[in-house]
Image (cartoon, rainbow, N blue to C red; front, side):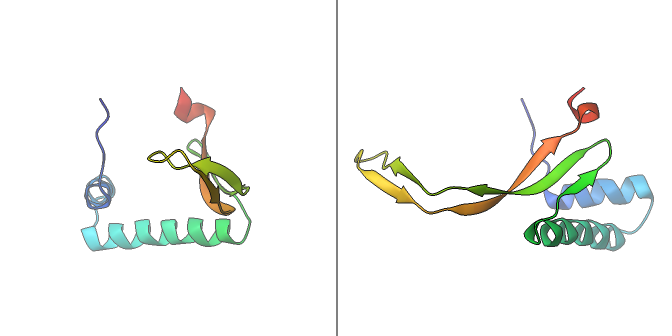
Length: 91
């Protein structure tokens, strides 16, 4: 079974490991996430050595099905954030 780790729990753990204030850890994590979002929005990928690579991925428009009625539904093209784990993380 996998357990979810909330953002506040992640911040608290980071503060404990780095031996810093929770406010400082929160600012660092928020800045890192904001930079990943900004960079991928600009079309760049963000590689964190030993962890993985974040990149923007395009999804083409397609036809899906309404699960309730079975009728075809047009799904718009969209961009989503993708993550590819590094070999070290997979191991």
